[in-house]
Length: 148
Image 1 (cartoon, one colour):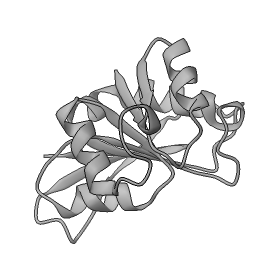
Image 2 (spheres, helix red, strand yellow):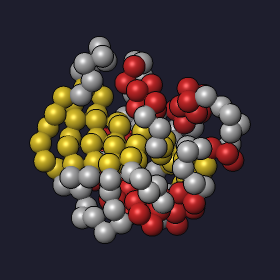
Image 3 (tube, one colour):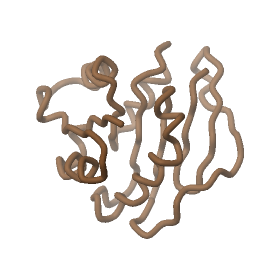
Image 4 (cartoon, helix red, strand yellow):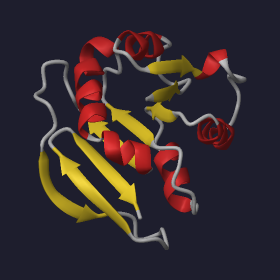
């Protein structure tokens, strides 16, 4: 799976994902550091990359328009390092692989390095602002939304 790491996360995230067997690039290596969120999203969609970010605007941009891609992994924590969140991010990628491939938003909140792998809890409905029907899968540490 290909990942684009947003400017608000360290370039170490790209190294971490590459070492885990994924293909990852930090935005600073492919675009202007001052680029807007829409430009980052467009690049990710054109190059078939999942966006890894800590910015709440990315899921909002995806949910507000009619396209399904790129997928977004949103990490929300006081500590945004690979040491603190890396294991949880990798577990969420593994658990939500099909959703990320189809077009999804995965949100990890307050995950820690030794957290157990996410587990399915129950279906949910997301996003009343989006005119398309969306289904979601709830995870212990993550939320994955598949756009239908």
